[in-house]
Length: 266
Length: 297
Image 1 (cartoon, rainbow over the protein chains, first blue to last red):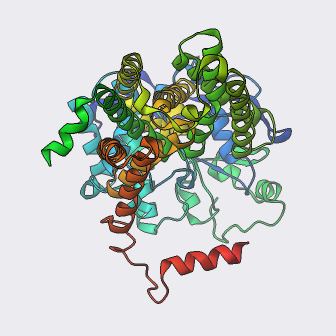
Image 2: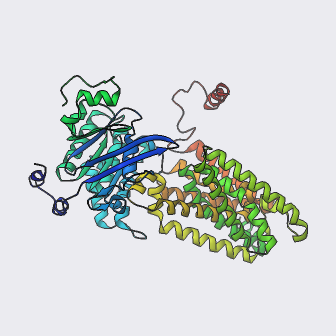
Image 3: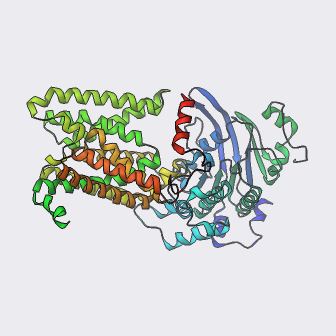
């Protein structure tokens, strides 16, 4: 079913390319993270599949961001190297678009919306070169897709939280990456932006990309995900949402005090 | 008016020092822009104090003082990073410890050697721009060209790295190399500026023009251009003031730059103190700041 989904819809040339190459999955084997002598993550083994929208959930301090950063090689971790297909992910970083938590960024930085989205093209452009017309076009398209075209010359400090998040999303789109990683993209943003962002996540997953999102709450939004990684220092469960979001798993992750919305998410 | 501008230029020492002042004003504003956005103002101060023993040792062994200062500056940043990453001591404390130790060592060495070498500690601390030689002009020009070249060549990568280091690392940019490049830029700029304003005031040339520009424009390269304008104008004005009113040159330049900053702080179109009054106008901002200071302590 997952492979069938690639071929419906109208597909752009970029999407066709990724389909024909067949984006592989990410495999994480026995990863642990120590932070100043404290164990942050213990022995995580899991797979993340392309073409599916994967959410990482868990209580505060469960190591959600740590897992994402360790996977991408942004913090030191022990265990086997993370593989993307048959090669270590660390050798294929140009395929990764990572969007950090909004709070980690200095939004008074002197840059416009355009400047930030253009950063998505830097790796493709290469050292000592100017941005190509293709890059300019990709950035314009990405801004259009997140509905921020009108703001392209706006300093980033004048944006609302939701707009800032959409600019970061546009940056990752402009990058034409295969692996999209978002650290808590829905913190402090409005419902409208959340809908726009989930729509784009869905489109990315449907076009065969690998989309990994850290989600901060267990609200209704969780039903948007296909797969869930449930974490609390160690892996509680991973796989299809319906299978992971069992009471037993949630109790184990959240220590019995589940503030799960009473509906039937599973 | 014309005469006022031309007169000092008859003297070759004024020509030389004006060229050095302009070059230094230029590269300080460019590199200072990175210090501003990286919140590394204190690191600039730390490196500038740390280069002193390098200068002294270069004098003792007869090496080029620019190279000696540069090496000392780089070593100090290595020590700062070592303390920060290998212990629980935070960066600000690490900087304070390292730079005061280096500074003390530098003062000690220079005091010991200054009689034999006919050098003056004050020139290191406060600069001696009127005494620059043709060789100094050449060295400063070379450093300026190197600094500008590096910034132009890796501008877009440095923009990404300074804005979002994790995002830049995730796509595979060599962030350690970029960070090292940034440290080299800072050290080179400080070394080039020592002749003009000395160890103590170099921070002002780095931060004040860039800070002025930061209040006025909102893109990094605009900030650099605007900062260069402020920096160069401050250098020239400061030199003329020092010539006509017999003021110390370094401090004169710094005071002019601070004047520009004050002006921008009051009248910035987006965040000026006077152009954008605070939302609660009953109480002047100054009083409020004072109150919050008292409360905190």
